Length: 165
Ligand SMILES: CC(C)(COP(=O)(O)OP(=O)(O)OC[C@H]1O[C@@H](n2cnc3c(N)ncnc32)[C@H](O)[C@@H]1OP(=O)(O)O)[C@@H](O)C(=O)NCCC(=O)NCCS
Image (cartoon, rainbow, N blue to C red; front, side):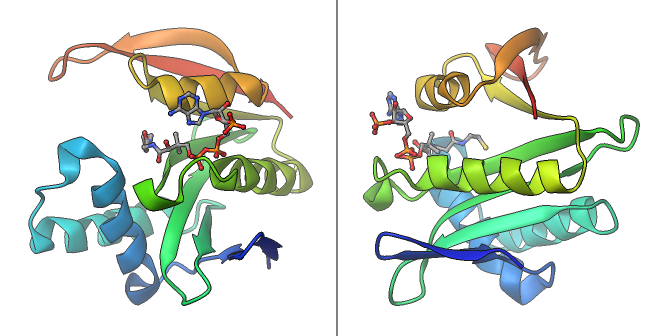
């Protein structure tokens, strides 16, 4: 079980039950501008989507909590079905009040160390080409761009990034 401190924050693993995942779904809708206006039903549905995506797939959900127990940052991913050696880092973010304190970098380091211990060979993630903060951080952390996917329902391109462990 991962558990450590980052300044005043506590970082720990989050379980795959709906009550534990509800704050993750809530925060996910606060960090992404496109999701801020989602309904309560939509947010609750997303907690179930996370649970279903990770269950039985060697998933890892990490959260960073404030001293009063509020979720400030999250990062999660799972083993891909067709490439067993690949850990797919799916989503993550930091509440705007808690950014530029090294929280996401800390979650990234913990995730990669855990993935290495589980014998994954590399981590992959997809980042939109206009998401400068996430691209910069991922490049600093050793990812390289290996491809791109254009989306039919949104302008722009998702960059496929891979980091050997
Ligand atoms: C990207 C994001 C996760 C970074 O979180 P964070 O905790 O603030 O990041 P860190 O403090 O660990 O930053 C590490 C480094 O990344 C780079 N970085 C982070 N935010 C940056 C920004 N807005 N612009 C440029 N570089 C940035 C910097 O080099 C930073 O180091 P520094 O603060 O010493 O200069 C956060 O901005 C966020 O939640 N964005 C919205 C969520 C999102 O886009 N998720 C992806 C889709 S799921």
